[in-house]
Image (tube, rainbow, N blue to C red; front, side, top):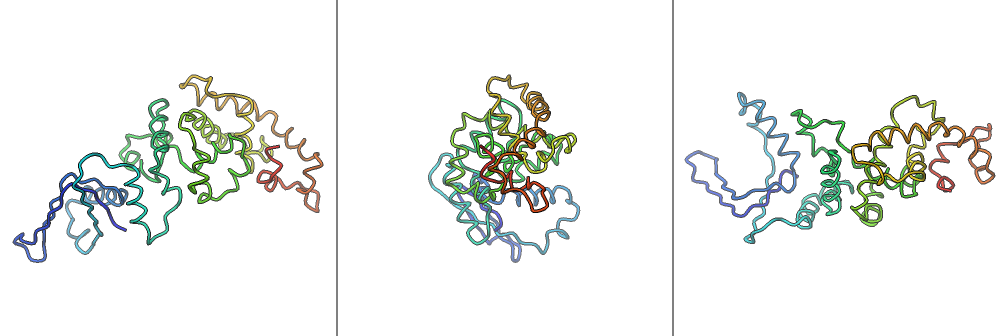
Length: 285
């Protein structure tokens, strides 16, 4: 879909003295859709200044410029409406549609100001910083796992694992999950638990890390309140809580195998279907 720019004024002139070449003058331009395209083109330009014509000579990119006589800042709602209209003809992930929601912008700011992490509202938005080595990629929070982990911490671990992203980021479900930016500390702590579960030996967890990461997130939240921790201790506390509950996880799995309401999860050969259990309706109970 190319690049969409919002500008105060726009002027086109064909009188440039060059055949088939015009000139566009844009006042106060802001890219409101196609930022990744703009970054990629800019990066290619900077890296290949000695062969511009060879690289770009036969290439074209659609440019749309929207003009408004009204001054002032653009509202997130306006930007979101333009983005949706621009992307009508191609499939856009629901998670991208939600990227400019007010609550996402607030959460992003609160997490960075208080913890120094970069919450990625839109996929790839921090790629330039990582590429130029002024952002540590380990501090970037992937929105998909962020939303799933927080949803699990609120008591819905099976749904957090099994639901498709388009469902989780649909407007109604999204508003249900991220309904209050004041809970940003809980959101971050849930994410840090999920992030650090990928470390260590998986066999020490039984089937927990393989199938039940979001169940572990919820179980830890049942025993602690991250809002009581100092901000600088969140990563350390997440690892501590993971270590504490890991010691009991195999015991938990043996216990649930013996509950009568879980008999339906046994295969004919006698093995227990942990994959199905960690996505099932009995998990939260």
